[in-house]
Image (cartoon, rainbow, N blue to C red; front, top):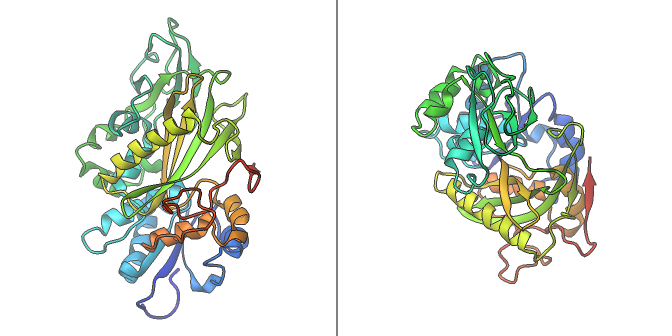
Length: 374
């Protein structure tokens, strides 16, 4: 799936696609609204598809071969968690050959494994939690109400609220975690086992985590989106994540900018402080030139606690942002592509910060932009 022709000295955009994030989606919904990349035609891009009929290692080899061909001219975009899993692994495989950017294997593994994040990432320990093992008969009692969910590879099976004082059977008893979502991923295990802090989380009997329960009637779930460029943290936007009442693990829609967290509020200050703590901890491990999405609980007393973290090369709702921000000469999709080319996205006159540190047009509450994305 490599573009025709020989290797050149210019940056070559490489897009990782899946059966969900397709070429058509990129060419119809993103590139036409990109203010700096809308000139690109489909044939100008190197497309690497993650084929669900192939093993993890086979798909990884295809991506590694493409990145090795283009070397440091590679400008690789991974728009969601599955592509980032492959890109971060490819960057790790090639780290002694090519200085690629926009993904870090250690950081991505820590962020995507709920238990590893709680135990290792600074700022993630504010919520009480305990691990659930495959051999456990019952879910551990936190002495407060809890919320049980799989650690990785088990989907949403068994997601439930747990009442303190009650004996609740482990819904994943006898289950083994399939690391990376594929039993044919020996390379993933090899890469992860090279890091001492990851080895405890390679135990396939670590199947779930029970965390302090947050009552939906009393809290809001909000995402703080920002990015890292050249090891510096930049804030982008705060958005509401609204989940289905009957299925609290299913995201229904987002509201941008947040209707819960107001500009200048203590909640906003606490959220960005937590975001900075987490981002800087990951930067110390090698994260750079990519977006981060911190999903967090916002409590009535102003407390903000980490829920989940996504490390990827773009912003969570990039399609909606691309449409909305295009007219002002900036858009988040273009910013994401700039980052993986090691270019700082251009400043905008609409930046609300006097320092000029921002590199995008963030949504605000003054009516300039706003979107409800389903």
